[in-house]
Length: 94
Length: 528
Image 1 (cartoon, each protein chain N blue to C red):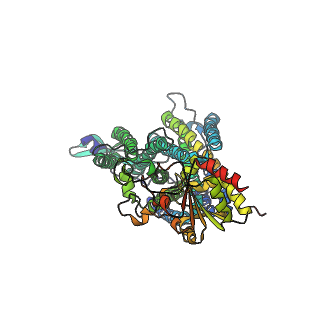
Image 2 (cartoon, rainbow over the protein chains, first blue to last red; image 1 turned 90 degrees about the vertical axis):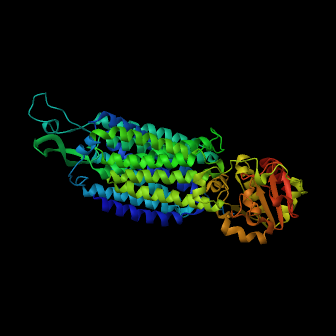
Image 3 (cartoon, each protein chain N blue to C red; image 1 turned 180 degrees about the vertical axis):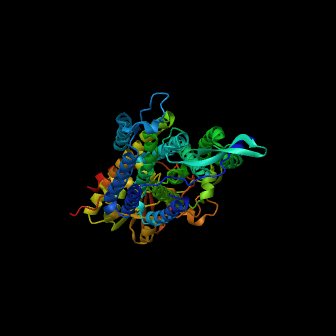
Protein backbone atom coordinates (compact mmCIF):
# COMPACT_ATOMS: atom_id res chain seq x y z
CA UNK A 1 0.00 0.00 0.00
CA UNK A 2 1.30 3.45 -0.72
CA UNK A 3 1.90 5.94 2.06
CA UNK A 4 -1.11 8.11 1.27
CA UNK A 5 -3.59 5.20 1.46
CA UNK A 6 -2.12 4.15 4.80
CA UNK A 7 -2.24 7.71 6.06
CA UNK A 8 -5.88 8.01 4.96
CA UNK A 9 -6.83 4.91 6.92
CA UNK A 10 -4.95 6.25 9.92
CA UNK A 11 -6.57 9.69 9.89
CA UNK A 12 -10.07 8.27 9.41
CA UNK A 13 -9.47 5.72 12.18
CA UNK A 14 -8.46 8.56 14.51
CA UNK A 15 -11.84 10.18 13.90
CA UNK A 16 -13.63 6.88 14.44
CA UNK A 17 -11.66 6.43 17.66
CA UNK A 18 -12.55 9.92 18.82
CA UNK A 19 -16.31 9.41 18.44
CA UNK A 20 -16.37 5.82 19.65
CA UNK A 21 -14.38 6.59 22.78
CA UNK A 22 -16.51 9.61 23.71
CA UNK A 23 -19.53 7.34 23.58
CA UNK A 24 -18.00 4.95 26.11
CA UNK A 25 -19.78 5.34 29.44
CA UNK A 26 -17.43 6.73 32.14
CA UNK A 27 -18.34 3.78 34.35
CA UNK A 28 -16.45 1.56 31.91
CA UNK A 29 -13.30 3.63 31.52
CA UNK A 30 -11.14 1.13 33.39
CA UNK A 31 -12.28 -1.81 31.21
CA UNK A 32 -11.73 0.51 28.23
CA UNK A 33 -8.10 0.93 29.20
CA UNK A 34 -7.69 -2.78 29.77
CA UNK A 35 -9.21 -3.70 26.42
CA UNK A 36 -7.29 -1.04 24.47
CA UNK A 37 -4.22 -2.52 26.08
CA UNK A 38 -5.16 -5.93 24.76
CA UNK A 39 -5.93 -4.77 21.24
CA UNK A 40 -2.83 -2.59 20.94
CA UNK A 41 -0.95 -5.87 21.26
CA UNK A 42 -1.98 -6.51 17.67
CA UNK A 43 1.66 -5.51 17.33
CA UNK A 44 2.15 -9.26 17.75
CA UNK A 45 1.64 -9.36 13.96
CA UNK A 46 5.09 -7.81 13.54
CA UNK A 47 6.60 -10.17 16.08
CA UNK A 48 5.10 -13.18 14.28
CA UNK A 49 6.55 -12.05 10.95
CA UNK A 50 9.98 -11.66 12.54
CA UNK A 51 9.81 -15.01 14.30
CA UNK A 52 8.61 -16.83 11.19
CA UNK A 53 11.54 -15.69 9.08
CA UNK A 54 14.50 -17.90 9.80
CA UNK A 55 17.16 -16.10 7.77
CA UNK A 56 18.27 -13.62 10.43
CA UNK A 57 18.59 -15.35 13.83
CA UNK A 58 18.80 -12.09 15.81
CA UNK A 59 15.52 -10.83 14.37
CA UNK A 60 13.91 -14.22 14.94
CA UNK A 61 14.72 -14.21 18.64
CA UNK A 62 13.56 -10.62 19.04
CA UNK A 63 10.35 -11.71 17.33
CA UNK A 64 9.86 -14.68 19.66
CA UNK A 65 10.39 -12.49 22.73
CA UNK A 66 7.97 -9.96 21.23
CA UNK A 67 5.39 -12.74 20.82
CA UNK A 68 5.69 -13.69 24.50
CA UNK A 69 5.30 -10.08 25.66
CA UNK A 70 2.38 -9.34 23.33
CA UNK A 71 0.66 -12.62 24.28
CA UNK A 72 0.85 -11.78 27.98
CA UNK A 73 -0.92 -8.59 27.09
CA UNK A 74 -3.48 -10.10 24.73
CA UNK A 75 -4.55 -12.93 27.01
CA UNK A 76 -4.12 -10.93 30.21
CA UNK A 77 -5.86 -7.87 28.78
CA UNK A 78 -8.91 -9.66 27.41
CA UNK A 79 -9.18 -11.91 30.50
CA UNK A 80 -9.01 -9.06 32.98
CA UNK A 81 -11.50 -7.04 30.91
CA UNK A 82 -13.89 -9.99 30.85
CA UNK A 83 -13.45 -10.39 34.61
CA UNK A 84 -14.30 -6.75 35.22
CA UNK A 85 -17.24 -6.66 32.83
CA UNK A 86 -18.72 -9.75 34.48
CA UNK A 87 -19.00 -7.72 37.70
CA UNK A 88 -21.25 -5.03 36.24
CA UNK A 89 -24.67 -6.22 37.27
CA UNK A 90 -28.14 -4.85 36.93
CA UNK A 91 -30.28 -4.46 39.98
CA UNK A 92 -31.88 -7.74 40.96
CA UNK A 93 -35.63 -7.58 40.70
CA UNK A 94 -37.13 -8.42 44.02
CA UNK B 1 29.95 12.33 6.25
CA UNK B 2 31.33 11.85 2.76
CA UNK B 3 30.71 8.12 2.90
CA UNK B 4 27.22 8.83 4.20
CA UNK B 5 26.50 10.90 1.13
CA UNK B 6 28.10 8.45 -1.21
CA UNK B 7 25.99 5.60 0.06
CA UNK B 8 22.72 7.50 -0.08
CA UNK B 9 20.23 5.85 -2.38
CA UNK B 10 19.67 7.96 -5.42
CA UNK B 11 16.68 6.18 -6.87
CA UNK B 12 14.24 3.66 -5.59
CA UNK B 13 11.18 1.68 -6.44
CA UNK B 14 7.85 1.52 -4.63
CA UNK B 15 7.86 0.12 -1.10
CA UNK B 16 5.67 -2.79 0.05
CA UNK B 17 5.29 -5.56 -2.50
CA UNK B 18 1.94 -6.60 -3.96
CA UNK B 19 -0.51 -7.43 -1.18
CA UNK B 20 -2.86 -10.36 -1.45
CA UNK B 21 -6.32 -8.72 -1.39
CA UNK B 22 -7.73 -11.42 0.90
CA UNK B 23 -5.00 -10.80 3.42
CA UNK B 24 -5.59 -7.06 3.35
CA UNK B 25 -9.32 -7.73 3.73
CA UNK B 26 -8.71 -9.97 6.75
CA UNK B 27 -6.66 -7.30 8.49
CA UNK B 28 -9.36 -4.73 7.69
CA UNK B 29 -11.94 -7.06 9.23
CA UNK B 30 -9.79 -7.41 12.29
CA UNK B 31 -9.62 -3.62 12.60
CA UNK B 32 -13.41 -3.38 12.31
CA UNK B 33 -13.83 -5.93 15.10
CA UNK B 34 -11.59 -3.78 17.29
CA UNK B 35 -13.80 -0.75 16.61
CA UNK B 36 -16.82 -2.86 17.60
CA UNK B 37 -15.03 -3.93 20.78
CA UNK B 38 -14.77 -0.31 21.91
CA UNK B 39 -18.25 0.46 20.65
CA UNK B 40 -19.61 -2.26 22.94
CA UNK B 41 -18.35 -0.37 25.96
CA UNK B 42 -21.00 2.31 25.49
CA UNK B 43 -23.10 0.36 27.99
CA UNK B 44 -22.44 -2.46 30.46
CA UNK B 45 -25.13 -4.53 28.74
CA UNK B 46 -23.29 -4.65 25.39
CA UNK B 47 -19.77 -4.60 26.80
CA UNK B 48 -19.28 -8.34 27.13
CA UNK B 49 -20.18 -8.90 23.49
CA UNK B 50 -17.77 -6.10 22.64
CA UNK B 51 -14.95 -7.83 24.47
CA UNK B 52 -15.65 -10.99 22.46
CA UNK B 53 -15.48 -8.97 19.24
CA UNK B 54 -12.06 -7.81 20.35
CA UNK B 55 -10.91 -11.39 20.83
CA UNK B 56 -12.24 -12.35 17.39
CA UNK B 57 -10.39 -9.43 15.83
CA UNK B 58 -7.16 -10.51 17.47
CA UNK B 59 -7.65 -14.12 16.39
CA UNK B 60 -8.18 -13.02 12.79
CA UNK B 61 -5.04 -10.89 12.84
CA UNK B 62 -2.86 -13.62 14.35
CA UNK B 63 -4.16 -16.44 12.14
CA UNK B 64 -3.88 -14.31 9.00
CA UNK B 65 -0.28 -13.48 9.81
CA UNK B 66 0.60 -17.07 10.60
CA UNK B 67 -1.01 -18.34 7.40
CA UNK B 68 0.71 -15.77 5.17
CA UNK B 69 4.05 -15.94 6.94
CA UNK B 70 4.19 -19.63 7.69
CA UNK B 71 7.80 -20.36 8.60
CA UNK B 72 9.57 -21.75 5.57
CA UNK B 73 12.68 -23.85 5.47
CA UNK B 74 14.82 -23.57 2.39
CA UNK B 75 17.48 -26.18 1.95
CA UNK B 76 20.55 -24.67 0.42
CA UNK B 77 22.37 -26.43 -2.37
CA UNK B 78 25.87 -27.80 -1.85
CA UNK B 79 28.54 -25.18 -2.28
CA UNK B 80 29.50 -24.67 -5.88
CA UNK B 81 26.02 -25.39 -7.26
CA UNK B 82 24.77 -22.99 -9.86
CA UNK B 83 21.46 -22.48 -8.01
CA UNK B 84 20.92 -20.09 -5.10
CA UNK B 85 19.15 -21.14 -1.90
CA UNK B 86 15.83 -19.74 -2.96
CA UNK B 87 15.61 -21.50 -6.30
CA UNK B 88 17.04 -24.85 -5.35
CA UNK B 89 14.14 -26.68 -3.75
CA UNK B 90 10.49 -26.07 -3.08
CA UNK B 91 10.36 -24.36 0.31
CA UNK B 92 9.01 -26.58 3.05
CA UNK B 93 6.94 -25.54 6.03
CA UNK B 94 9.24 -25.27 9.01
CA UNK B 95 7.19 -27.01 11.68
CA UNK B 96 9.86 -26.59 14.32
CA UNK B 97 9.76 -22.85 13.84
CA UNK B 98 5.96 -22.80 13.96
CA UNK B 99 6.21 -24.84 17.17
CA UNK B 100 8.47 -22.23 18.71
CA UNK B 101 5.97 -19.52 17.87
CA UNK B 102 3.11 -21.48 19.40
CA UNK B 103 5.18 -22.15 22.52
CA UNK B 104 5.93 -18.41 22.80
CA UNK B 105 2.20 -17.66 22.55
CA UNK B 106 1.43 -20.33 25.15
CA UNK B 107 3.99 -18.94 27.61
CA UNK B 108 2.49 -15.47 27.22
CA UNK B 109 -1.04 -16.84 27.56
CA UNK B 110 -0.27 -18.69 30.80
CA UNK B 111 1.42 -15.66 32.36
CA UNK B 112 -1.29 -13.27 31.17
CA UNK B 113 -4.26 -15.34 32.27
CA UNK B 114 -2.71 -16.13 35.65
CA UNK B 115 -2.11 -12.44 36.33
CA UNK B 116 -5.58 -11.48 35.10
CA UNK B 117 -7.24 -14.00 37.44
CA UNK B 118 -5.22 -13.12 40.52
CA UNK B 119 -4.98 -9.35 40.36
CA UNK B 120 -6.94 -7.41 42.98
CA UNK B 121 -9.25 -4.77 41.54
CA UNK B 122 -7.54 -2.12 43.68
CA UNK B 123 -4.28 -2.98 41.88
CA UNK B 124 -5.78 -2.41 38.43
CA UNK B 125 -3.83 0.84 37.77
CA UNK B 126 -0.45 -0.80 38.25
CA UNK B 127 -1.53 -3.80 36.19
CA UNK B 128 -2.54 -1.55 33.32
CA UNK B 129 0.76 0.35 33.62
CA UNK B 130 2.66 -2.95 33.55
CA UNK B 131 0.72 -4.08 30.48
CA UNK B 132 1.50 -0.79 28.73
CA UNK B 133 5.18 -1.35 29.32
CA UNK B 134 4.89 -4.74 27.58
CA UNK B 135 3.26 -3.19 24.50
CA UNK B 136 6.03 -0.59 24.43
CA UNK B 137 8.79 -3.15 24.71
CA UNK B 138 7.14 -5.37 22.10
CA UNK B 139 7.06 -2.38 19.73
CA UNK B 140 10.78 -1.81 20.29
CA UNK B 141 11.52 -5.48 19.62
CA UNK B 142 9.41 -5.53 16.46
CA UNK B 143 11.07 -2.32 15.25
CA UNK B 144 14.49 -3.80 15.81
CA UNK B 145 13.52 -7.09 14.17
CA UNK B 146 12.30 -5.14 11.14
CA UNK B 147 15.57 -3.26 11.06
CA UNK B 148 17.66 -6.43 11.26
CA UNK B 149 15.57 -8.41 8.79
CA UNK B 150 13.84 -5.91 6.51
CA UNK B 151 13.38 -8.52 3.80
CA UNK B 152 10.97 -10.56 5.91
CA UNK B 153 8.86 -7.45 6.50
CA UNK B 154 8.79 -6.54 2.79
CA UNK B 155 10.63 -3.32 3.50
CA UNK B 156 13.38 -3.62 0.91
CA UNK B 157 13.27 -1.45 -2.15
CA UNK B 158 15.60 -1.37 -5.12
CA UNK B 159 18.09 1.41 -5.01
CA UNK B 160 21.05 2.40 -7.08
CA UNK B 161 24.06 3.26 -5.03
CA UNK B 162 27.23 4.98 -5.99
CA UNK B 163 29.70 2.16 -5.96
CA UNK B 164 32.59 4.49 -5.32
CA UNK B 165 34.62 3.28 -8.30
CA UNK B 166 35.11 5.82 -10.99
CA UNK B 167 34.36 4.41 -14.42
CA UNK B 168 35.49 7.48 -16.22
CA UNK B 169 36.79 10.77 -14.88
CA UNK B 170 33.96 12.48 -13.01
CA UNK B 171 31.44 9.66 -13.40
CA UNK B 172 30.97 7.07 -10.72
CA UNK B 173 29.48 3.67 -11.29
CA UNK B 174 26.14 2.69 -9.77
CA UNK B 175 25.30 -0.69 -8.34
CA UNK B 176 21.78 -1.97 -7.91
CA UNK B 177 21.11 -3.01 -4.35
CA UNK B 178 18.24 -3.32 -1.89
CA UNK B 179 17.79 -0.92 0.99
CA UNK B 180 15.10 0.14 3.46
CA UNK B 181 13.44 3.26 2.10
CA UNK B 182 13.85 6.48 4.12
CA UNK B 183 10.09 6.64 4.74
CA UNK B 184 10.13 3.15 6.23
CA UNK B 185 13.11 4.11 8.35
CA UNK B 186 11.33 7.17 9.72
CA UNK B 187 8.31 5.01 10.61
CA UNK B 188 10.58 2.38 12.13
CA UNK B 189 12.51 4.99 14.13
CA UNK B 190 9.28 6.54 15.40
CA UNK B 191 7.88 3.15 16.33
CA UNK B 192 10.99 2.24 18.28
CA UNK B 193 11.18 5.66 19.95
CA UNK B 194 7.50 5.77 21.01
CA UNK B 195 7.67 2.14 22.10
CA UNK B 196 10.76 2.78 24.21
CA UNK B 197 9.20 5.88 25.81
CA UNK B 198 6.05 3.87 26.56
CA UNK B 199 8.13 1.11 28.09
CA UNK B 200 10.36 3.09 30.44
CA UNK B 201 7.58 5.57 31.29
CA UNK B 202 5.21 2.73 32.18
CA UNK B 203 7.83 1.00 34.29
CA UNK B 204 8.17 4.18 36.37
CA UNK B 205 4.38 4.62 36.53
CA UNK B 206 4.08 0.99 37.64
CA UNK B 207 6.74 1.47 40.33
CA UNK B 208 5.04 4.61 41.64
CA UNK B 209 1.52 3.14 41.58
CA UNK B 210 2.51 -0.11 43.27
CA UNK B 211 4.43 1.72 45.98
CA UNK B 212 7.78 0.25 44.89
CA UNK B 213 8.88 3.83 44.38
CA UNK B 214 7.84 6.94 46.27
CA UNK B 215 4.92 8.76 44.68
CA UNK B 216 6.52 12.12 45.34
CA UNK B 217 7.98 13.85 42.32
CA UNK B 218 11.70 13.60 41.67
CA UNK B 219 12.80 16.95 40.31
CA UNK B 220 16.10 17.14 38.52
CA UNK B 221 17.63 20.58 38.15
CA UNK B 222 17.14 21.97 34.65
CA UNK B 223 14.90 19.03 33.83
CA UNK B 224 12.91 20.89 31.19
CA UNK B 225 16.08 21.70 29.28
CA UNK B 226 17.35 18.12 29.60
CA UNK B 227 14.00 16.73 28.42
CA UNK B 228 13.64 19.10 25.48
CA UNK B 229 17.25 18.48 24.52
CA UNK B 230 16.75 14.72 24.59
CA UNK B 231 13.55 14.98 22.53
CA UNK B 232 15.33 17.16 19.98
CA UNK B 233 18.21 14.67 19.85
CA UNK B 234 15.73 11.85 19.17
CA UNK B 235 14.19 13.78 16.27
CA UNK B 236 17.60 14.59 14.80
CA UNK B 237 18.71 10.97 15.17
CA UNK B 238 15.56 9.75 13.43
CA UNK B 239 16.26 12.07 10.53
CA UNK B 240 19.91 11.02 10.33
CA UNK B 241 18.87 7.37 10.54
CA UNK B 242 16.46 7.83 7.66
CA UNK B 243 19.06 9.45 5.44
CA UNK B 244 22.03 7.30 6.34
CA UNK B 245 23.34 4.60 4.07
CA UNK B 246 23.00 0.93 5.10
CA UNK B 247 26.46 0.80 6.64
CA UNK B 248 26.00 3.78 8.94
CA UNK B 249 22.57 3.12 10.46
CA UNK B 250 23.48 0.80 13.34
CA UNK B 251 25.02 3.34 15.77
CA UNK B 252 22.21 5.78 15.00
CA UNK B 253 19.40 3.35 15.80
CA UNK B 254 21.20 2.20 18.96
CA UNK B 255 21.54 5.81 20.13
CA UNK B 256 17.92 6.48 19.19
CA UNK B 257 16.71 3.51 21.24
CA UNK B 258 18.83 4.37 24.28
CA UNK B 259 17.77 8.03 24.28
CA UNK B 260 14.10 7.08 23.92
CA UNK B 261 14.32 4.73 26.92
CA UNK B 262 15.97 7.56 28.83
CA UNK B 263 13.38 10.21 27.95
CA UNK B 264 10.50 7.93 28.99
CA UNK B 265 12.13 7.60 32.37
CA UNK B 266 12.90 11.33 32.67
CA UNK B 267 9.38 12.34 31.63
CA UNK B 268 7.62 10.35 34.35
CA UNK B 269 9.87 10.69 37.43
CA UNK B 270 8.91 14.35 38.09
CA UNK B 271 5.18 13.57 38.03
CA UNK B 272 3.59 13.12 41.44
CA UNK B 273 1.33 10.30 42.62
CA UNK B 274 -1.81 12.44 42.42
CA UNK B 275 -1.33 12.89 38.69
CA UNK B 276 -0.83 9.19 37.96
CA UNK B 277 -4.35 8.75 36.50
CA UNK B 278 -3.36 11.21 33.78
CA UNK B 279 -0.01 9.50 33.27
CA UNK B 280 -1.55 6.04 32.94
CA UNK B 281 -4.03 7.38 30.36
CA UNK B 282 -1.25 9.17 28.53
CA UNK B 283 0.89 6.03 28.36
CA UNK B 284 -2.19 4.19 27.11
CA UNK B 285 -2.26 6.69 24.28
CA UNK B 286 1.48 6.27 23.59
CA UNK B 287 1.16 2.49 23.37
CA UNK B 288 -1.45 3.10 20.68
CA UNK B 289 0.75 5.48 18.70
CA UNK B 290 3.60 2.95 18.93
CA UNK B 291 1.34 0.28 17.42
CA UNK B 292 0.23 2.73 14.72
CA UNK B 293 3.83 3.60 13.82
CA UNK B 294 4.64 -0.10 13.43
CA UNK B 295 1.46 -0.41 11.37
CA UNK B 296 2.81 2.24 9.00
CA UNK B 297 6.10 0.35 8.73
CA UNK B 298 4.35 -2.90 7.88
CA UNK B 299 1.53 -1.33 5.88
CA UNK B 300 -0.86 -3.27 8.11
CA UNK B 301 -4.45 -1.99 8.34
CA UNK B 302 -5.31 -3.79 11.57
CA UNK B 303 -2.36 -2.24 13.36
CA UNK B 304 -3.06 1.24 12.03
CA UNK B 305 -6.75 1.18 12.95
CA UNK B 306 -5.97 -0.21 16.40
CA UNK B 307 -3.18 2.27 16.97
CA UNK B 308 -5.44 5.17 16.06
CA UNK B 309 -8.25 3.86 18.32
CA UNK B 310 -5.99 3.28 21.30
CA UNK B 311 -4.11 6.50 20.72
CA UNK B 312 -7.27 8.59 20.69
CA UNK B 313 -8.75 6.63 23.58
CA UNK B 314 -5.79 7.35 25.84
CA UNK B 315 -5.72 10.98 24.77
CA UNK B 316 -9.42 11.46 25.57
CA UNK B 317 -9.05 9.76 28.95
CA UNK B 318 -6.07 12.01 29.79
CA UNK B 319 -8.19 15.01 28.83
CA UNK B 320 -11.10 13.84 31.00
CA UNK B 321 -8.78 13.30 33.97
CA UNK B 322 -7.13 16.70 33.54
CA UNK B 323 -10.52 18.38 33.33
CA UNK B 324 -11.68 16.57 36.49
CA UNK B 325 -8.69 17.99 38.38
CA UNK B 326 -8.79 21.35 36.61
CA UNK B 327 -5.20 20.89 35.59
CA UNK B 328 -3.80 21.61 32.17
CA UNK B 329 -2.17 18.74 30.36
CA UNK B 330 1.02 20.77 30.04
CA UNK B 331 1.25 21.37 33.79
CA UNK B 332 0.80 17.65 34.47
CA UNK B 333 3.55 16.77 31.99
CA UNK B 334 5.81 19.45 33.43
CA UNK B 335 5.43 17.63 36.73
CA UNK B 336 6.18 18.68 40.26
CA UNK B 337 2.58 18.69 41.56
CA UNK B 338 2.45 17.66 45.20
CA UNK B 339 6.14 18.42 45.60
CA UNK B 340 6.02 20.82 48.53
CA UNK B 341 4.14 19.19 51.36
CA UNK B 342 5.34 21.82 53.80
CA UNK B 343 4.09 25.13 52.48
CA UNK B 344 0.91 26.79 51.39
CA UNK B 345 -2.64 25.99 52.31
CA UNK B 346 -1.91 22.77 54.19
CA UNK B 347 -0.39 24.99 56.88
CA UNK B 348 1.11 23.83 60.16
CA UNK B 349 -0.79 26.64 61.86
CA UNK B 350 -4.19 25.19 61.01
CA UNK B 351 -6.55 26.62 63.54
CA UNK B 352 -8.65 24.30 65.67
CA UNK B 353 -12.23 24.79 64.58
CA UNK B 354 -15.22 23.23 66.29
CA UNK B 355 -16.82 20.24 64.66
CA UNK B 356 -19.51 17.77 65.62
CA UNK B 357 -18.67 14.15 66.14
CA UNK B 358 -21.21 11.36 66.05
CA UNK B 359 -21.44 7.64 66.64
CA UNK B 360 -22.55 4.78 64.42
CA UNK B 361 -25.84 4.67 66.30
CA UNK B 362 -26.51 8.38 65.59
CA UNK B 363 -25.74 7.85 61.94
CA UNK B 364 -27.91 4.75 61.69
CA UNK B 365 -30.83 6.55 63.30
CA UNK B 366 -30.69 9.44 60.87
CA UNK B 367 -30.09 7.23 57.84
CA UNK B 368 -33.25 5.29 58.69
CA UNK B 369 -35.27 8.48 58.79
CA UNK B 370 -33.92 9.65 55.44
CA UNK B 371 -35.71 9.37 52.14
CA UNK B 372 -32.72 9.85 49.93
CA UNK B 373 -29.07 9.09 50.66
CA UNK B 374 -26.19 9.86 48.31
CA UNK B 375 -22.97 8.00 49.01
CA UNK B 376 -19.70 9.59 47.89
CA UNK B 377 -16.96 6.97 47.93
CA UNK B 378 -13.30 7.87 47.56
CA UNK B 379 -10.16 5.85 47.29
CA UNK B 380 -9.87 5.74 51.09
CA UNK B 381 -12.92 3.45 51.06
CA UNK B 382 -11.11 0.99 48.82
CA UNK B 383 -7.97 1.17 50.95
CA UNK B 384 -10.10 0.30 54.01
CA UNK B 385 -11.81 -2.48 51.99
CA UNK B 386 -15.15 -1.02 53.08
CA UNK B 387 -17.01 -1.43 49.77
CA UNK B 388 -18.69 -4.72 50.69
CA UNK B 389 -19.84 -3.41 54.06
CA UNK B 390 -21.04 -0.27 52.31
CA UNK B 391 -23.12 -2.24 49.83
CA UNK B 392 -24.60 -4.19 52.73
CA UNK B 393 -25.55 -0.91 54.39
CA UNK B 394 -27.17 0.30 51.18
CA UNK B 395 -29.11 -2.97 50.88
CA UNK B 396 -30.48 -2.64 54.41
CA UNK B 397 -31.46 0.98 53.79
CA UNK B 398 -33.16 0.12 50.49
CA UNK B 399 -35.16 -2.59 52.23
CA UNK B 400 -36.33 0.09 54.61
CA UNK B 401 -37.50 2.16 51.66
CA UNK B 402 -34.60 4.62 51.51
CA UNK B 403 -33.41 5.64 48.08
CA UNK B 404 -29.64 5.11 47.85
CA UNK B 405 -27.44 6.47 45.09
CA UNK B 406 -23.69 6.51 44.61
CA UNK B 407 -21.92 9.61 43.30
CA UNK B 408 -18.59 9.04 41.56
CA UNK B 409 -16.06 11.74 40.85
CA UNK B 410 -13.85 11.06 37.81
CA UNK B 411 -10.77 11.07 40.06
CA UNK B 412 -12.37 9.00 42.83
CA UNK B 413 -10.11 6.06 42.07
CA UNK B 414 -6.57 5.91 40.86
CA UNK B 415 -7.37 5.54 37.18
CA UNK B 416 -10.33 6.53 34.99
CA UNK B 417 -13.41 4.57 36.03
CA UNK B 418 -11.57 2.76 38.82
CA UNK B 419 -14.18 3.45 41.50
CA UNK B 420 -16.93 2.05 39.29
CA UNK B 421 -15.03 -1.24 39.02
CA UNK B 422 -14.48 -1.36 42.78
CA UNK B 423 -18.21 -0.82 43.41
CA UNK B 424 -19.13 -3.33 40.73
CA UNK B 425 -16.89 -5.84 42.46
CA UNK B 426 -18.87 -5.23 45.66
CA UNK B 427 -22.01 -6.03 43.61
CA UNK B 428 -23.38 -2.53 43.64
CA UNK B 429 -25.85 -2.42 40.72
CA UNK B 430 -24.51 -0.03 38.10
CA UNK B 431 -27.89 1.72 37.74
CA UNK B 432 -27.36 3.16 41.23
CA UNK B 433 -23.99 4.65 40.35
CA UNK B 434 -23.92 8.16 38.90
CA UNK B 435 -21.29 10.47 37.49
CA UNK B 436 -20.57 13.90 38.92
CA UNK B 437 -22.47 15.98 36.38
CA UNK B 438 -25.49 13.67 36.44
CA UNK B 439 -26.04 13.74 40.18
CA UNK B 440 -24.68 17.05 41.44
CA UNK B 441 -28.06 18.78 41.13
CA UNK B 442 -29.68 16.12 43.35
CA UNK B 443 -27.86 17.02 46.57
CA UNK B 444 -30.45 19.73 47.25
CA UNK B 445 -33.10 16.99 47.59
CA UNK B 446 -30.87 14.59 49.49
CA UNK B 447 -31.37 14.03 53.19
CA UNK B 448 -27.93 12.59 53.74
CA UNK B 449 -24.66 12.96 51.85
CA UNK B 450 -22.55 10.05 53.04
CA UNK B 451 -18.86 10.73 52.40
CA UNK B 452 -16.56 7.78 52.84
CA UNK B 453 -12.86 7.88 52.04
CA UNK B 454 -13.22 10.97 49.86
CA UNK B 455 -12.06 14.47 50.72
CA UNK B 456 -10.85 16.79 47.96
CA UNK B 457 -13.82 15.98 45.70
CA UNK B 458 -16.24 17.51 48.24
CA UNK B 459 -14.08 20.47 49.23
CA UNK B 460 -15.94 23.75 48.61
CA UNK B 461 -12.58 25.55 48.52
CA UNK B 462 -12.40 24.34 44.92
CA UNK B 463 -15.31 26.69 44.18
CA UNK B 464 -14.45 29.65 46.38
CA UNK B 465 -10.78 29.83 47.36
CA UNK B 466 -8.65 31.05 44.48
CA UNK B 467 -5.43 30.36 46.41
CA UNK B 468 -6.33 26.70 46.93
CA UNK B 469 -4.31 24.16 44.92
CA UNK B 470 -7.57 22.47 43.95
CA UNK B 471 -9.31 25.69 42.88
CA UNK B 472 -11.46 25.16 39.79
CA UNK B 473 -11.74 21.41 40.22
CA UNK B 474 -15.38 20.32 39.85
CA UNK B 475 -16.65 19.12 43.25
CA UNK B 476 -19.84 17.67 44.73
CA UNK B 477 -22.22 20.22 46.26
CA UNK B 478 -22.56 18.29 49.50
CA UNK B 479 -23.24 21.51 51.43
CA UNK B 480 -26.70 21.52 49.80
CA UNK B 481 -27.67 18.24 51.47
CA UNK B 482 -29.68 18.41 54.72
CA UNK B 483 -27.18 16.24 56.58
CA UNK B 484 -23.57 15.37 55.82
CA UNK B 485 -21.87 12.31 57.30
CA UNK B 486 -18.13 12.30 56.89
CA UNK B 487 -16.28 9.08 57.65
CA UNK B 488 -12.64 9.79 58.32
CA UNK B 489 -9.97 8.07 60.36
CA UNK B 490 -9.08 11.23 62.33
CA UNK B 491 -9.29 14.98 62.05
CA UNK B 492 -5.57 15.14 61.32
CA UNK B 493 -5.25 13.77 57.82
CA UNK B 494 -5.97 15.88 54.79
CA UNK B 495 -6.65 14.88 51.20
CA UNK B 496 -4.22 14.17 48.39
CA UNK B 497 -3.93 17.88 47.68
CA UNK B 498 -3.16 18.65 51.32
CA UNK B 499 -5.84 21.24 52.01
CA UNK B 500 -8.27 21.71 54.90
CA UNK B 501 -11.94 21.11 54.15
CA UNK B 502 -14.73 23.46 55.28
CA UNK B 503 -17.23 20.61 55.06
CA UNK B 504 -15.84 19.23 58.35
CA UNK B 505 -17.04 22.30 60.21
CA UNK B 506 -20.49 22.88 58.70
CA UNK B 507 -23.52 22.88 60.99
CA UNK B 508 -25.13 19.93 59.26
CA UNK B 509 -21.95 17.85 59.21
CA UNK B 510 -21.41 14.95 61.57
CA UNK B 511 -17.89 13.56 61.62
CA UNK B 512 -17.70 9.79 62.04
CA UNK B 513 -14.11 9.32 63.11
CA UNK B 514 -13.12 5.69 62.67
CA UNK B 515 -11.78 3.20 60.20
CA UNK B 516 -14.21 3.25 57.26
CA UNK B 517 -14.92 -0.46 57.25
CA UNK B 518 -15.43 -0.69 61.02
CA UNK B 519 -17.71 2.35 61.04
CA UNK B 520 -19.92 1.07 58.22
CA UNK B 521 -20.16 -2.37 59.84
CA UNK B 522 -21.25 -0.75 63.09
CA UNK B 523 -23.88 1.31 61.26
CA UNK B 524 -25.21 -1.87 59.64
CA UNK B 525 -25.42 -3.51 63.06
CA UNK B 526 -27.20 -0.47 64.52
CA UNK B 527 -29.68 -0.47 61.63
CA UNK B 528 -30.94 -3.98 62.42
